[in-house]
Amino acid sequence: MRAGSEAVREEEAANGEALETGEVELLARGPLDALEARALERLLARGGQADSGRAGDEEEDARAAADRAAVASTIAGVATTIADVRTRGDEALRALAARHDGVTLDALEVPRTTWDDALASISTEVRGALTRAADNIRRFHQAQVPDEVRLETEPGVRLTHVWRPLDRVGVYAPGGRAAYPSSVLMGVVPAKAVGVREVVVCSPPARSGLPPREVLAACALGGADRLFALGGAGAVAALAYGTESVPAVDRVVGPGNRWVTEAKRQVAGQVPIDGPAGPSEVLVLADGSADADLVAHELLAQAEHDPDAACVLVTTSQRLAADAEAGLARLLTDAPRKDVARTALAARGGILWARDLDHAVDLANRYAPEHLVVMTADALAVARRVGTAGTAFVGSSASVAFGDYLTGANHVLPTGGRARSWSGLSAHHFMRSYTLQEVDAPAGAAMADDVATLARAEGLPAHAAAALARAARPADAAAAPARSRP
Image (cartoon, rainbow, N blue to C red; front, side, top):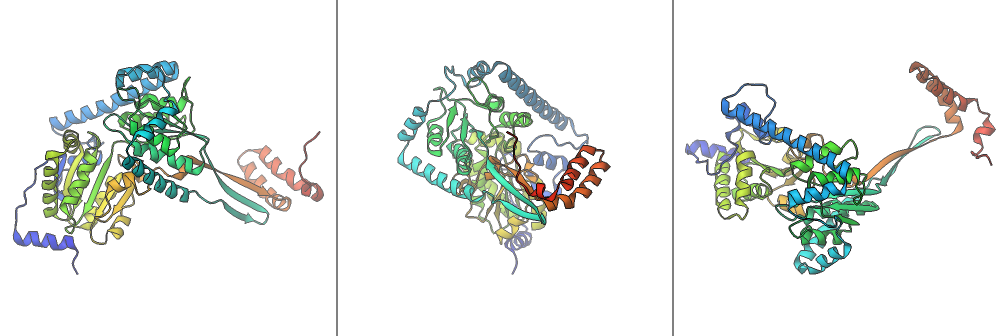
């Protein structure tokens, strides 16, 4: 039996049909084999300039220079913000809120009664959906908590690998163009599920001086402990270093725009972060059996997030590529956020057709998307062949939107190709591990000579002496419990 994609390609070749494309402005479009190297590099770099070292035409070189200038500006601007928050604390945070959010903040912290009022005021439908989401998130992340590992590596040498929750965690919940109560739940609920004592949320204020009502409600429902009306790089700096009002935390988690992502990168030497969760992205991997309208919906769902979002379709069927683009064009006509979506598609969008499924899978692994959607025959087997995705949605029934809100999996995921080496937010990010090492007297005596040999080889005689001192102890003294002097 032929795969659906092969059947469609043969049908296209037999018909000799010229398939129309070009209905949506995109960064890259066309057969993957024929795509110019620099165009592919820009797609893989999410519209930025890839470090190819090759000369191009004046337009390409000018665009590359602009990309580099934008990156340099972001890095410098974030560094200035972090330094200002470290120096001036709350005063700097108030100035940033006035400059970027257009609000005057008398108090940075939002009182708990305000969250509770917000929770009471939201509709029954929204509260029910948030509760369902929180329950699923809690169950899935509790199931991820690792068991202790106990092993006797030699007789008398017992090791126990132990996990413990962090004491205080900071959760960044983005705002600005939309309210994201789901991002509150994705950070707060897992932290509480594993036993974090204090969860501190930062989210940008609206013109009212408060985060959106849904964000406030999610903080109350999810179990947050403190909430600050702070956004952007300043909020990340406050969580990392602390101010008069904002406590320093043991880890900063949560998604954000390029400013937030860069701030997390810059503070990572001070406090651990979850990972580089920047502007949203999706790669749809499809064959000719896929529903073109569903493909178009997935592309638009990511494009509406942010002008910096990245959306790519790679398919084995040129007909599907054309139909999906036509469907996307129709959806864009009446989309409430069509201006945002069009900007994202033009800067970082792509519709490509590959010569076969292996070719498409290879591109998906190179792209390393935040979200992978697989719409092919035997979708689970194909999804398992892409080992570099932040998360994968398997089959036509699995929309990214389900994972964004309700499945229980975490939607805070690595972007920008970093899924090659980073993982999405999980229970492990809210915990740390250490090892208990027990060595009884006979085991210590048995190891002492080899330990001394290795220590002397490294030029550390005190290490050797510490090991040999255990071997020299009388058997009865070694067996006796340790006692402190009065």
